[in-house]
Amino acid sequence: MCGIGGVLYKNASGKVGADLERLIYGIRHRGEDSSGVAIFSAKEKSGQRDMLLMNVRVESDKAAEDVLTTIEELLKKAGGAILEAQTKGSIMSMQAVYGGSLLDLCYELDKRSVQTISIGNQLRIYKDLGTSDRLDQIYHYSDIDGTHGIGHARLATESIVSPDRAHPFWAYGFSDVAIVHNGQLTNYWKLRRKFACWGYQFRTDNDSELIAIYTAHYLKKGMKLQDILEQSLGDLDGTYTFLVSTPTEIGFAKDKLAAKPLVYVDLEDRVVLASEEISLQALLPDMDNITVVEPPPYLTGTWSVTGEHYFTKLTYQAVGLE
View 1 (tube, rainbow, N blue to C red):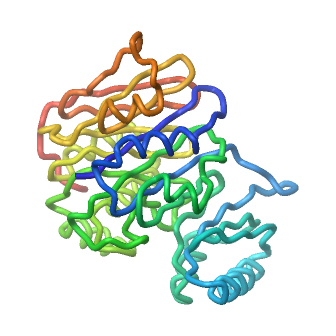
View 2: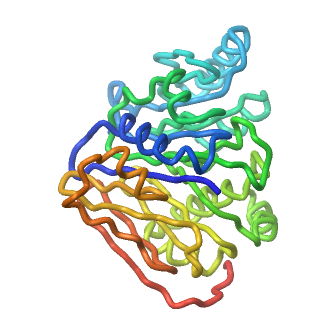
View 3: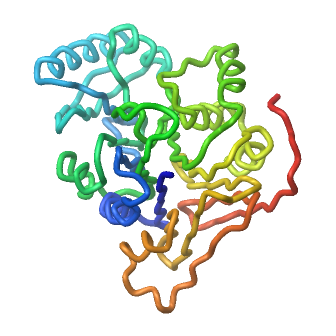
């Protein structure tokens, strides 16, 4: 059992970090092993180049110095540079410029044993052991404004308790794609072998990582997020509900049994999603005149930062991954 949540502001930035802290703390009873948030903000530029946001894991001050030197050297080879770096807890956050391949950079960091948490132009992921309030005390993510974000409270069932297996999962090597997941994929190893044959590398044995890579793979092929979510209900076996966030959207998918709960409210200024209504109440204490919606089984939906939304109710069929 885990808890998931998300918030998306319509045509504006808002207190996404603070919203997620309260939202995820409100479902801490669903899992206290670890927690995390993925926060998306508007792109920033350095001159004519988009700023690159990087979060990596460091275990000591000496490790932080070594990692910083390693990343500086790799960026320099592609005409890039670190503009700012700071370490809180075991996460070093950097702003950089970089002109090379993001996937190549990730593989080079792997070779040098640098644990990458997230890289993107709009995305930062903070995740660690414990509940969301502990996470915020260390990383102060509630101070971060943004357009949208997702969060997770984890009770470990499928893999060990460790910071790298905490959610959200970043789609490794692909900019600005993150997921949170409650449930179990029963065909995880089968699909993992298929994606490995296609050249993808996995960092953990957590089945949720597959959803992130699956999403990024089809985004790369030009599919829309809503179409990917619809397809996923045929490709992913198991009992699950998950949220996906891209630079402009949040989407969800519920399997045919819908045993893993999800509710949402669609307000004038934002959309808020969570595993349970008590989580919504932690963020929105005055809910007397707010309609709470519980999506039915086998439904997918997306909301855009521009205010658009789409829903699709599917009829169960085994599609098969192609």
